[in-house]
Figure 1 (cartoon, helix red, strand yellow):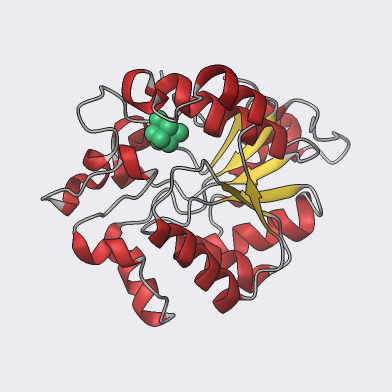
Figure 2 (figure 1 turned 60 degrees about the horizontal axis):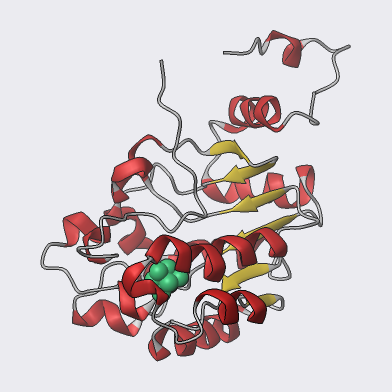
Length: 249
Ligand code: SF4
C-alpha cells in the first residue's frame, strides 16, 4: 500500500501522473460522496472534457445514464457496437438517448480489417469468444478511450464474480476508472427506475436480467445470479474490457 499521508499536506502536490496513486487519492477524497456528487465532482472538477461513460445500454444502464445526464448531458457516451447486439438493445439505445437528451453517444465499431482477418463469417464467438470480444470490444474501446484520462462504468458488486470486490475508484491501463454504483443493491437500482420513471430494456420482461451480445446472452431463471446468462456454457464471465480486480491483502 502506498503512503497517502502527503495528500493532506498543504505543500504537497497530488501525483496525478500516477493513476494508481491518483485513484487512491480520489477514493479517499470522495468516499462519503453520493453517486451524483461523485459524478459531478469528477466530470466538472477533476476531469473536465477528459472523462467518458462506457455503457452497454443493457438491463440496468438507464440508472447511470440518467445520473450522468443530470450532471452533464453532453458527456461522451461510448457504446461498443459489436455488430452482434439484439435489435431491442439498439432501439433501447435510441430511446434512452432521446429521452435523456444525451448529445454525444458514440457507436464504436470493430475495425473492418480485424473482422476480415479473424471473423469473416461472423461465427468467431462460437469457438473463440475471447478472441471475438477482443476484436469487437477490447480493441475498439482502447481506440475510443484515446484522449480520455478517466472513464465511468456501471458495474456493481452484487453482480458477483470478480465484481464482488470492486472499488468505486480504481486505476486501469493508465487511466482512472470510476464505478459510482459499485455498492448499490438491485433494490436501489429498481427504486431509481421507478422514482425517475425510466423505461426498461424490453428484454428484461422476458427473462434477461443481464444483456450483452445476442449470441452470448441467454435468459436465466433466478434474477439473483443476474450475469449467469452471459456466455452460458462457454466458461467465460467477462468480455475482457475489465481486467480482474487484484485481491486485497
Ligand atoms: S459477447 Fe459474444 S458476440 Fe459479443 S463480442 Fe463477445 S464473444 Fe463476440
